[in-house]
Image 1: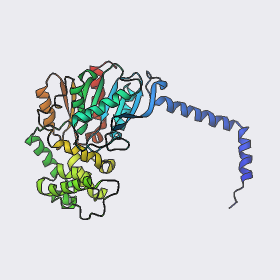
Image 2 (image 1 turned 90 degrees about the vertical axis):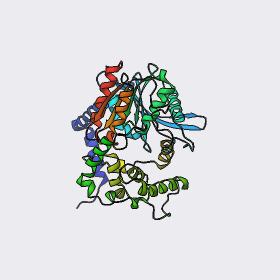
Image 3 (image 1 turned 180 degrees about the horizontal axis):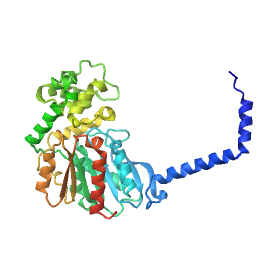
Length: 384
């Protein structure tokens, strides 16, 4: 084998400069760059109008919140609020799709994730709504038209409704994904979903999920990571112990507990997360096993205790029109929640059941959800 000779390489480069091959390559590269730069926008949206994931930091008294701003500067604003214990990256695909059809998206990172904080020891939906207001006051150029569309996913749907109660003049519409939070029961819906999940052979063969939740209980106190406070770790350890006694179906509570169980490996968490959040026919993406933030989850979990009645001040969502999408197999926020909202606010609510999906519906049926959201926005608002 010949040894490397830098002289030969330099000679080749010098010759290349004087050939048409070099010019052809450069032309090809320029064409590719032009194609990439224009493909991120439709024909009616000049490239100059798009921001490339602007990362902002809204600061107020004792609070700092990260947000991700994308889309045309003159597009109607769509606010994105993620689920319990999860981050703004949940909306990556949805935000891109909304930007493509002309909307400007603002995905807010909850307290306890990255530079958003601090977490609250005595949280309230009122305070979380104020966090949204703080961000919307900070975005460059403000809210085009003065009113925004608010999309709340899972826990975020409650914050969306609270914001609409406090600031109805700034809300154009609400879109609630995995709508829940209020105490609405539908034993037939839950039983149907539960039976279907229990009949799923893949989950049934996973072992301890169908038997007990003993593996959720921490057997060693030496695994606690240094960056998480002891009281938060102890909260989830205690919750796991209570789960083994109080959740005979081993579906919702045990799965949500396992999501934050740092003492379990991703492989051990997967069957619990699958059963709690996904439809029986769905695959569980890896980021749904690992993409959880305990500080945020601990803070938000406290809201489930005293704020879940149908008379809670956030439930009605002000006076905004609402699109509600709930998963067919969702055992955490069953379709009964959407039914209740439609029956209670018939003139304001439009409902759809997302087929073949559970609580993690945005990961399971992104195309169905995106199409329905865009259709709803176009039908009810000014962008066509």
